[in-house]
Amino acid sequence: MRLRARHPQCEHLAQGGRASPGNGRPPSRSPGPAHRLHTLRDRLTVEASAHLAAQLPELLRGAYYDGWTPSSVPIKYDTDGYVNRFVQEARVDAEDVPRMAAAVTTVVRDHVSPGTLESALDQLPNDICALLLQPA
Image 1 (cartoon, rainbow, N blue to C red):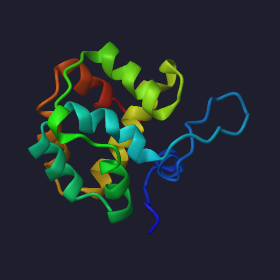
Image 2: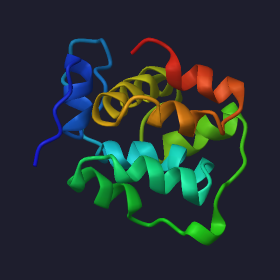
Image 3: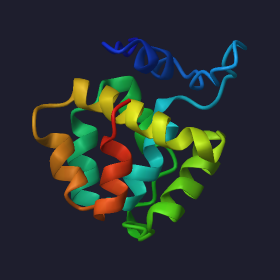
Image 4: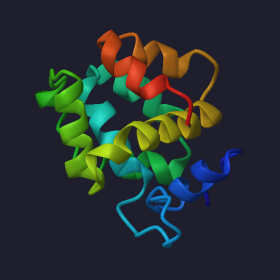
């Protein structure tokens, strides 16, 4: 099963590519979109994370749960902590995180029922929500 997105950048991210650096070079490969979701997953409660994952496409859901330790969540961190974890999980540069996080949010929103993503985001501090909800 291949994850499809309406936004061209999201389609590229859904295929596991890195956001285009904007310098004319092809984007490098990095872990798939589920690894970019691990930072969000680990910040949510077990209940919210499971509710969000239940609506993801099957292949993405399996990757979403990969390496998850429910007994150690939610992990509390601020925006800087979120960006640092995203950089480690997705193996991207910190300056790419706002654009990529917003693109992944768009992909997730396109694949879950209305209100599901918002329910998960309600658990996050406002500054992290702002990072995730900016235009992709």
